[in-house]
Length: 459
Image 1: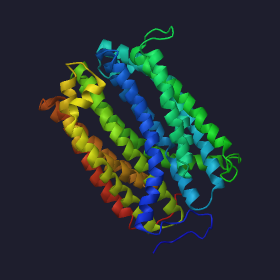
Image 2: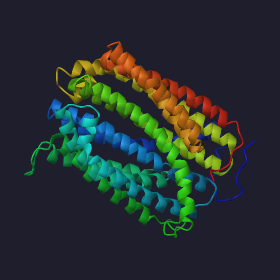
Image 3: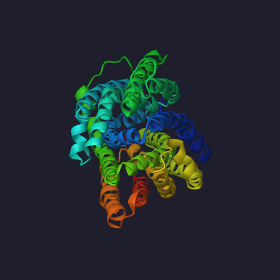
Image 4: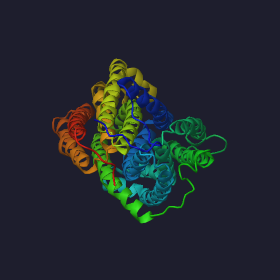
């Protein structure tokens, strides 16, 4: 039997399966739109850069992987925000939420400055990865432009996680929709050179993204500071016990950051494998991954909603509610991703031509998308189950399972299928399908195990 919190301010449990579904969808919908907004920004950058030439698309693709790796490692460190906030909100301790926000913002600023300093040496990083002179030089210019926006994207992430943790998911969606309009305008000016600016190609596209990220910070922080009930959430409350709260962040954030790092560095290595197949292959890989990532945004939204609902249930010590929140999220994502997979499988050439008209790149994209379509449902499932496990603060075991799936299975498979068997880019994508499917299975087994235990909030 579920153990409900006695605090009348605690977020109440769902009374039926229908209510579980409705609550998950109400949280997931705006988060999906917001996450899609992030990817639309990348997609617009990719499409507009592709029109500037295949070489510029290759520069963007080779730079995006290391930037993404650094980005998600930092996001992993900040992920404790949504767990701690949702558990505090679920338990009725809303005044603690503001303290968590300010610690998260400070961590975000420090992380952003550190990673920006690394990205300023982007060309050297790409040369160390074995890329040729042209890709290293062009990709290095792009990484410098990513550097300018790193503090901003982390600050935005921390503030958004706070809002998601207290169930305020619409503001992030609105900010993201406005940001996409601004980003498209900046792209028009900076990629192709308008209003007196020199054409910047891929570097111009990323400079536009960095400028937009700072506008996003202004928008989301403006909302938080203007909330009518900000005092109820302790937004202006002194951050007492900073050291204790920081240690709780690190106990959650370090293993989650490692989890993100294992996954993203595995994909970074695979991107480098694609780069060794030539500029056309890495350009095609950027397109294929962007299509998969667009579908994945639905999984990210559902994963976030599932994580928040699992955290709420743990905050009120509701084991049955925690289990239902996780499995309902998993079921919903399978239903959502299946038709997307069918669409990608039926329209690979159409999708390829949206991104590029390069006759050397399009056939590679088409062949790769046919494999990627099979990966989409498994990718969504593993993401939502991972969100459920993170909402339960099951950090170290989940990190170990992610390492096994992505490094022990996926990376060796990519080398074997893509290079040893000369399967090229489709072979590499088959390896990703295998690794992601293994991750989904392992995460499902782990969530099944922890959902049968007695639970307590993360201390």
